[in-house]
Amino acid sequence: MTGSPPAAPHPAAASESGAAPTIAVAGPTATGKSDLALDLAERLDAEIVNADAMQLYRGMDIGTAKLPPEQRRGIAHHQLDVLDVTQEATVAAYQQAARADLASIAGRGRRAVLVGGSGLYVRAALDRLEIPPTDPEVRARLEAEAERLGGPVLHRRLRESDPVAAAQILPGNVRRVVRALEVIEITGRPFSASMPRREFLTPAVMLGLRVDRGVLDERIDRRVQRMWQAGLRQETEGLLDHGLRDGVTASRAIGYSQAIAVLDGTLSEEQARSDTAQATRRYARRQESWFRPDPRIVWLDATDGDRARLLERAWAAISQSAISHHAHRPVDAP
Image (cartoon, rainbow, N blue to C red):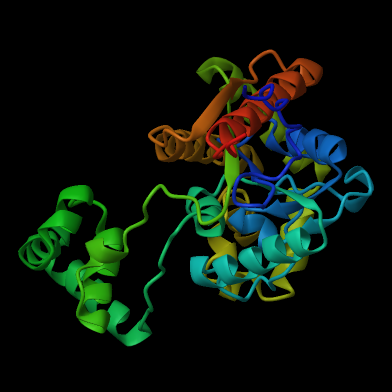
């Protein structure tokens, strides 16, 4: 006679691998990811790891919607304010640092909530993702060739050397074509051999937030207005004193590039606000396109802005994942 089936585990319970799954909260900007991450971290007694590339920068607070310390509810946050604006943010460096944080959190017996909208950074932290080396000289030469010959010529070259990668990269995406050719030249291997797979390195549950398009656009517009009213121009002016203009990554951040133009006198503040909102809406569309194909994401509608209901839906999704993990564990014979 077999015993009664085991009770469904609490979401904080360890998975079959022995590790409690990392909870990831992803999706487009202005969908409420930070608030949900805080709510989950409180309930799970967890620590938060940032996966927003621009929030890595010290001093870039207003324009990145970074939560100020007094709004973090005493919850430990990692991968915030770790770069100067003159430094380049790279996926490889982030992967190493974020994984070290996740391992350290787990080693202390704590849970981790990864939150952010930078899709490749989320995957770098969670997935089996090999990041090939770079060579600035090779990259510069290929970029010059793309400028001189045109993107389609380089895409044909990629198709000849790595048809699998060429089939997944549009000819118009010159940056990715150049990157693929750079990797092939440096490593002697096809770029497609290092393209990411949707496979978690350690157990994880991915929650995605989505908001109806019209509502999201309104939220973005309001957020942009609040940023400028809160002093985005003044924040940018202070960052210029710390070398923002020389920052390869930071100077191109949405909002900051427009504020630089205002300070340079090439754009009015009214036009800068409009351009910032438009660029943010386009960015949100790209984020949607990035996350949408991933079948592992449990999507939650955050259109109504009801945080209590959203938290309960998220908790239910995490609980269901824990049950699913438990159901696939081998049961000892009686």
